[in-house]
Amino acid sequence: MEKKEEKIEITDLHAQHVYANLISFNVNPEEICLGLGIRDVKEPARVAIHTYAHLTIPHFLRFADMVNKQVDLLIEKGVIAREPEQ
Image 1 (cartoon, helix red, strand yellow):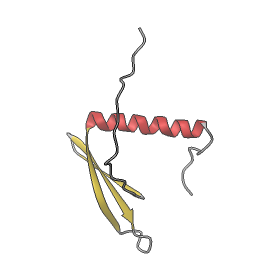
Image 2 (cartoon, helix red, strand yellow):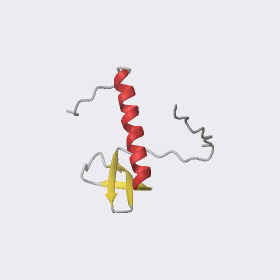
Image 3 (tube, rainbow, N blue to C red):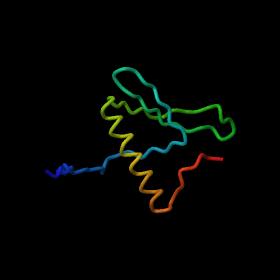
């Protein structure tokens, strides 16, 4: 039996766009809190966190799975290589 994909309609007309060059993870037994922030270019040890996203553990696992699939797709298309940054 083939698994059917759930159809979800996404509306993002009022979504805010945020930019980050640093992501922090605060973990507890009930949730993962992702902090999105901007690292100060002149003082790299200083980061201004501007947004927190709270995810339950199951939602975080689905998020991580989707990120890995997107990375694999970018590697497959030759856009990136899975190598550590220099």
